[in-house]
Image (cartoon, rainbow, N blue to C red; front, side, top):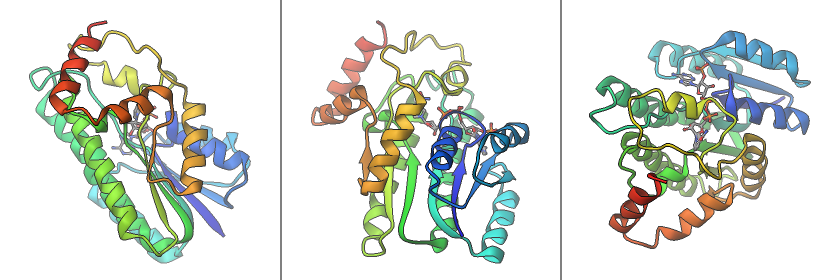
Length: 254
Ligand SMILES: NC(=O)c1ccc[n+]([C@@H]2O[C@H](COP(=O)([O-])OP(=O)(O)OC[C@H]3O[C@@H](n4cnc5c(N)ncnc54)[C@H](OP(=O)(O)O)[C@@H]3O)[C@@H](O)[C@H]2O)c1
């Protein structure tokens, strides 16, 4: 029995990955992970493929230990690991509480490594790891500093892990989207005093991001920029960071 493990499945991209994987009958069961159990239960009712719910905080060691025990007891055949849990906050270091910044690092970096390395022993040839990074991973972003740095970590981690897994048939795809308008990410990111970013022009939609990234992951691409803005941004990283930061200073005032 093959399964997909999806973190951040209670909303946004994670829930959409569960929907599209279920629609395409890609696995026999989907394991969904998040803290809001009522959302996971609603998703379970929506999907045609059987769903197993794990109400977990990914930064809680006991929760993670329990999950590792389940893996060890059941030894599932994992076809997909999709790590979509993550959050960001807009603002400078003065505008974002230190504990919130540490929380971003814990979830976006530490938990990503923890869940990935806990699941790797249960992957096999043709299994796919999908890590949701961000286009912010491509350069330093004042006003989105810790978030962007955490995603740069995830991008680098994913790429190096992909090379470490060469020869196993397992691939790792770091997905680097630009703003997505129909998830809870932007409202959560904007819960600060900052007005650093006022508009989210050219934002994409979760359906497209998920469909494009699943295609890229199937083909084994190490990086996926699911949209025109993130694709242009990736090309622009030939410029020095200081030039990119200057451009960002102008753009965010628009
Ligand atoms: N939307 C965008 O503009 C955008 C752009 C680029 C990259 N991204 C990235 O895409 C990923 C998905 O974001 P989204 O847009 O789908 O946002 P979202 O709708 O806010 O979803 C975030 C998910 O993360 C889960 N989560 C947060 N903290 C958690 C924790 N401690 N333990 C377990 N689960 C936790 C949330 O579930 P619970 O609260 O129920 O635990 C939720 O399911 C994130 O990594 C984000 O950085 C988003």
